[in-house]
Amino acid sequence: MTRQGDRRLHVNLHLDQAGHHIAAWRRNGHDLSRYDDITYDIELVRLAERGLLDSIFIADAPMLLHNARYRVPFLEPITLLAAYAVATSRIGLIATASTTYFEPYNLARQFASLDRISGGRAGWNIVTTALTGAARNFGDRELRDHDGRYRDAEEFVDVVTKLWDSWEADAVVADPAGGVFVDTGKVHAIDHRGRVFDVAGPLNVPRSAQGRPLLVQAGASEAGRSFGARFGEVIFTNQLSLESARAYYADIKRRAAGFGRAPEEIFILPGIKPVLASTEAEARRRAAELAELIEPEIGRTILTWQVDGIELPEMPLDEPFPDLTATLPPEVRSRYARLVEMARQHDMTTGRLLRRLAAGTHREFIGTPEMLADDMEEWFRAHGADGFTLQPQELPEGLEVFVDHVVPILQRRGLFRREYEGTTLRDLFGLPPVPSRHAVG
Image 1 (cartoon, one colour):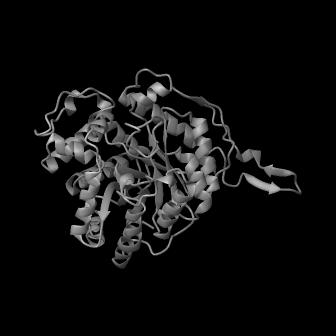
Image 2: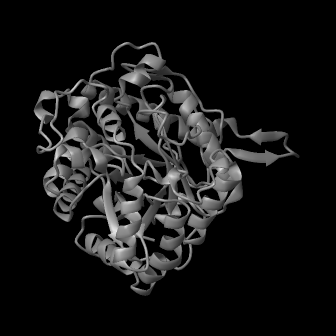
Image 3: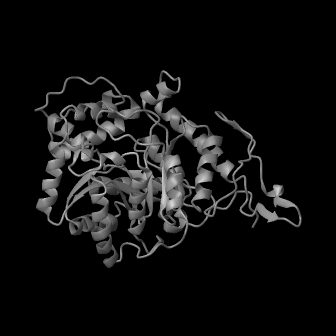
């Protein structure tokens, strides 16, 4: 779909069952009985596919995030995506999995299986997990240092891609007359002996239609940006202004070129959290109603989670939100710096920022479908984005409005597809299948 000289906008749906506003589940009419109903999730995914979105994405962390009192629980993402795979046919399926708390072989096998089940529609969002609570769930009392986790992740990704490449595309011959199902000459041990991992291989899952799952990344720190530019094919990011988005976009593309990669084959999709209605006044009323459902302590809970439980000094609610970035450990600085940027951009006191945190830290958009289409086009044409990670504040309403009203506007402007371009996730991004490193010719 996206080729140099023929750019088209991409949309990835970050699926959060009730919506991305932490109080969305409290809205009148939300059916709380379906919070763990897989058929409801499938309805949402099929709605996204009807809207021709590129992919759905499920975030994850191996711990209970902030306070369970306020959140709708969610299930393990790779398992969920396997269910979505058999209920859909074209939309991409991206799950988060941590290089710190998985083993390369198991992760490679799970994603290769999802890729096979879905016909080549899987993507892996690579994270290193900077959360002490997760470390404690795996017997670690302290987190590995920030840059060290990224060094380990580089080797982890190397091992996983070697495992995916251990099967050549035509290894399965299924020849009953000859009595050969797999040509073992086209299945290769990897014999990886590294600084962190020793893995013999080969994988026990054949190659998929797209060669291997799409690699997705979302790092914001210096190490995270370099990691994303080296490995990421899709980059999720949190940018609050067009100015910062353009700077981030240019930086990632420059770094990618430094790794010998084609910058136009890396797609940057910043998050956007829309509240939409037929008029701007109605959209603002809906956003205000959501804000009224926020319990006062939620903001403090989320702030504590953002800094991984670090005890912060007392912050008077009626004073400007303090910039403590330089005093914090490296693994949480980029997250805290985004909060400072948000506060400065909107001249927020600490009290206002804490209330805003309940709506999420990504860029909020309140307005009409036409206004959102204008905003997306501006960022896209200004090279602040190759598309967006859509995070509707309410579901299913927010997604329904986007599919039925925003998508047609983007289509009329020639910015968005009118039909799916192929059957794999790589097809949707205009990327060719990845051949095995063992393939000849």
